Image 1 (cartoon, rainbow, N blue to C red):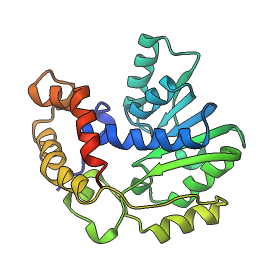
Image 2 (image 1 turned 180 degrees about the vertical axis):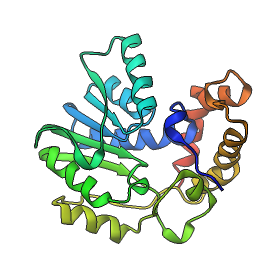
Image 3 (image 1 turned 30 degrees about the vertical axis):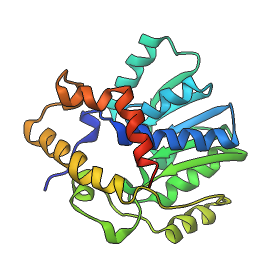
Image 4 (image 1 turned 180 degrees about the horizontal axis):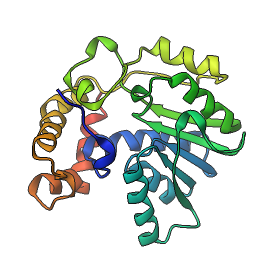
Length: 233
C-alpha cells in the first residue's frame, strides 16, 4: 500500500482533528494563557489558527512547502501578520534562538520522523525556562495497522518510551497518557481509512471539494457533537 502525500493536500481535517486540537489547546491554556508558541509540524494550520484566536503569537512551522504556502495565504486573507507567521523548517534543526518560545505544540508529527530524539532536544532548546510542550502521537505499538503504513508512520510509542525521550532531553514530564480507545480507533478504521483510500485512488482533494462528505467534515455542529462522543475515550 502506497503512503499518502500529506504535503500535497494540506487541507485535511474533520471531527477527530477538531477534538485532538481542542485537547491540545486546552492543555496549553492550563499552563500558559498567552505568549509565543511554536506549532511544529503544523500541517494545514488548524491548531495554529486556533492558537492565534486564543490570544497566542504563533510560528506555524512545517517541512512541506505546500502547507506553508497554504497557511501564508490564509494569514494574508485574515490579516494576521502581526500575530502569526509560517516557515518551512527542518524540525531537527530549528532556526530559532534558545529560550525564545513560551510554548511548543506538535500534533501527530513525531511518529513520522526517524530521528525523533533530535527533534525533542530542539523543542527543549527553544523553550524558555518553565515553558510548556504539548504533543500528541499514536500510541500502543501492538495496535499498528494499515493506516499507519498509509500515513508513513515510523513508529507508535509506549508511554514509557515517550517519557524517556523527553526526560533525557531535559523535560519534566507533567502528564502522559493514552486516549482515543475505542471510539477514536473505530473512527479511524471506519471513516478515516476509507476517506484516505478514496483520496489516493481518485487523486483528488476531497476535503476541499464542495461535496457532501466535505460539508459534513467541516460542519461546526458535527465537530462539536463528535468531540463530546470522542471525550468518552
